[in-house]
Length: 477
Image 1 (cartoon, rainbow, N blue to C red):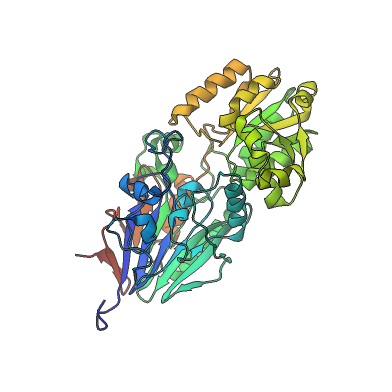
Image 2 (cartoon, rainbow, N blue to C red):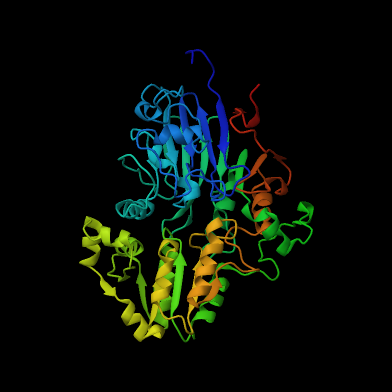
């Protein structure tokens, strides 16, 4: 950039417009640049690395670029990882870059391990604790050795002349944030995962009020629930003009608290064993199962890798159920497993068979054959957002088949009147209240259905540059 060239704010989106998750975008001012999120949309039906294809060691970054998993951005990756790829490496670049992660879901941060270690990556320390525990057990993201910088709620972070304000949306588990990015030209906001029916909905309403006061120029907004399968629960013909703004819970739908209460009601008098399959990054869910076990006089036992996260995050000594698996046997000599076994109580299949009513046992899909060693009579297999998530995953049908053969009743967290992301009417209320000049709906199969109040809806072209100059947002010719 020539010294006399005028600085201008530029925006680019690289991924995440029409996918569930995987939002990846940048805001730059001069040679200062922030990237928000570095995840990968979850679609096992089309995944190149399907669990059977082994990533190559020296070509791991190049291969992800070749198959379109990684965004093609200059100044992010190490030259030794790029090989002969023509992208400018982090070492060769004059960009002053920082990367910001809203929360620990893989669709928001699965690819952070590819970023050159000298580039700052900001992530809340709770998230770092969980990710480090996952990495110790071999279940974290593929990563170079690196440090993370902490996000402190509502404390602005400056990247040159760009300010990033982290807005706290949830203060449990890994913590959730939204990011308000301010440059000398204006404001660009990313909601992160948006929810107005959660137990901490008040924080999202506070976010809305902060944004309303700031007169936001551009807002990227999560509108996951605008897809057919969810929207038709509330708007049968899926007509976006019939999505009327309201802060209230849509008729017939459940709040987060009511949803968990209804699950507990179904489980509390269960005469047999409760087996559950949860998303291991979710410490809120782990805490819920520990609480349910306590309230029903059960012992909650986790498989070793999940137990290790619980042990590191909560600082408690968990009960552990060790599956009859080669991977568990091989792990016995690892530092993390030795540490865990020194601070936990092991539960055997025989103990569970003697008193099935006295246990809740976590089971991951890879160890699902363990069900044949557990008592099924009067028992239930609770599929609690664990992998495989749903029927779109080819492994889901296999999971269901094995559960049936083992004789367990099947119970799922997915139900007709609950969804984890913000309900359409509530998202519309959030958008209309903030009323940004430019609305970029994203993180959705149907972003076009989220309509602005007074501003303009933009579905940006991936990799196209847009400028924000004196609060005016437009494509760069």
